[in-house]
Image (cartoon, rainbow, N blue to C red; front, side, top):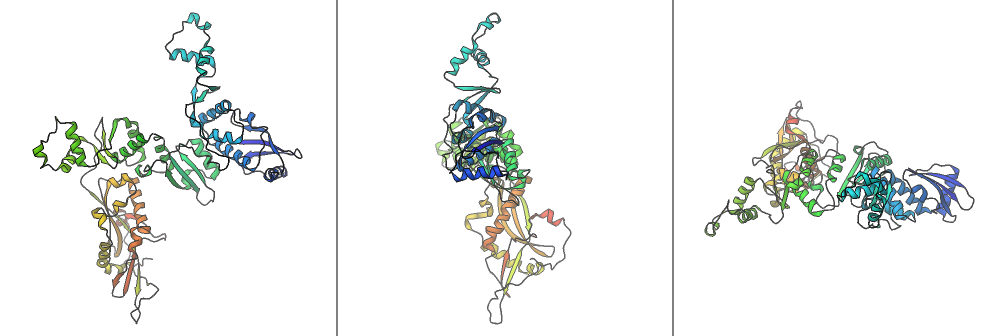
Length: 538
């Protein structure tokens, strides 16, 4: 919160603005805001009350116009999302940099990651004592009171300028400050320039929106939620992007945005480290975000060999690196299937081939996915439309309904149409080649649509072949992928394929916008009470 008292230069009228808005509608406030926006009357800050030390003394005297009022709004929102350490850093930065304008303050609040806080250093004496100890200089008790510790600190401060605060010493970390705000377009107050994931939040049933970056502190998330007028991130629709290409496709399914915030905390600006992280995710295939801490804490135990792209590459690599254990002479090499040999070596050595290259772990083998495939089947209703022919043999414009029971008579025709809808590039993996998540793509081998009769009805079925059982999160993500294929991908194309029948033409949709559309695992569906044949799919 930022409370400022402003005064009109023409009549001396004062008003208190509590930022961020909305403003009160008192006569004084409305009059002062009118003066600010008119640009005809000089309006200045005469006092300020904030939660940031030293800011109260910087703001008074600054003249404000409409853009500067927007800058004050930004500063108030930015301050509201700062954690304790960031507040201390801002306090020190204000003293160290001595900003001359609101624009300078805006930029400082966006550069707090360029400052560091050293706890415990409240003055030159405590710093001097620490520096002597750090340098291995022991001061006997007999002369301790005679040492000019402040002079020791001053020698250090000459090369490392900073500011003492009640919480410690604030100084630059050596990185140059960036001009984030040019005086025209204000940045998002809950975003950091080095944010890994950008999340755009839209509260359900409300028009306002907020953008923030992960990793984010609890204070920043709470400030964003307060502005949106909701209690939880789960009360918002969210769209996410990442500054790290491919990151979101290399994370396990997450239960809520809090888990995504947790994942972002493990990443940063080191591109090589980020590639290793994504390669390890693809290799280990964690079923949920809860497995991340164990993997990321041991990230130093992994090695990525980016030059190895195939099992054959790995076979040649091992033969070159471990000639005592493996040996193939020049004559035998002409008869060796190096692709098959590489796969055997990969399994034997406990490594995994990813899209980034081979990943190996020093202290244990990487978990291997089962070679035997497990079959999972997802059932959902079908929505048929029949265009019959009139007495002249022309198709009618309006479709007729067909009951679920009647649709069973055309199962063979529908299966034939599904087969014709396959693409050669999909192979036996089918729709699995289009999975966006690389982790799910490693675990799911095949996704092939079909239809099946059960309980007197014909159902849409997705036959899924997986390497091992799917976790609850993975099954949820797979179901979402299939729902998307039914509505906008494979299903959209299939429903436009006319199936010739005696009455005319049949179109079958695997998706419907109504509330009766649901995708269920086979066991869940078939455990429900049976329904009466002849029900109409609508």
